[in-house]
Length: 307
Image 1 (cartoon, one colour):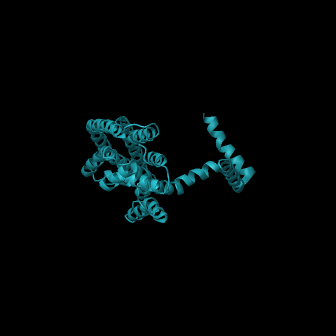
Image 2 (spheres, helix red, strand yellow):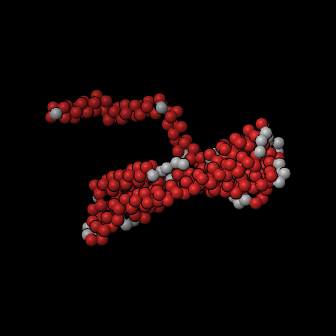
Image 3 (cartoon, one colour):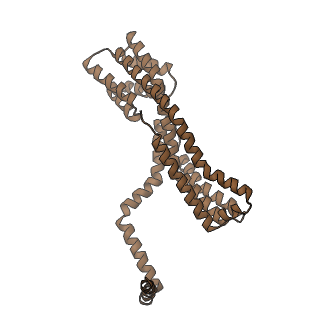
């Protein structure tokens, strides 16, 4: 081992003697350039996905949720959440003389601001889907009653648009508008299923399209779908009640290390300077945050039960 360690400085000095500092830097630069050139497609695809791809993803989700926002406003918001928050936090903490802590907080805020927009948008989309699933019971009841009263399918959909709140009224109104401009009703319903895919929409669209071709009583089918949806919603609410304790445990476990930091720091005034003012303390803080994040992720995956 000692001989191998003694050889490495000699090899490095030999490279410096043969190539020189500039030559060695040129070799390293050429190797980096070659790697980036070979993987340029993957690298540019990754960069595009992390920049413009995020903006396009958010714009697409906003369009699905009937939210109108100009693209440049999304870009400004993304920059403010990542670069803006990181720079402001770094300047504020650096002015207090805590450079290591300022670097750590800036990196954390940059990473969080960079990665959080997609999960936030997905959260609101899933919330809207759950609200839509709950409203589908009343919507299908209105459709069934309208068809029993002698209305056509487009007329019954129009009644749902007039009587129901968003998001059901928004989605059914788009179906109705597409049908008015000449899109076949079957295709408009298929677009609804693709735009807002749920198992309830799958049953609804499939049953309507099949019965419009083969004939049958749509009102009775809608009544059956309503029963299925009600049972699913009831089961989901029951599961949510059971996993609520698991979520509380996950939050308590995630907050416990930081509460212990506050407890020890309040008792020992020299605790926080060692933790936030030294490189070793910052490294251990990063490890703690990473382990807490992994633990929270594992717990959330365990208690995520699909109905």
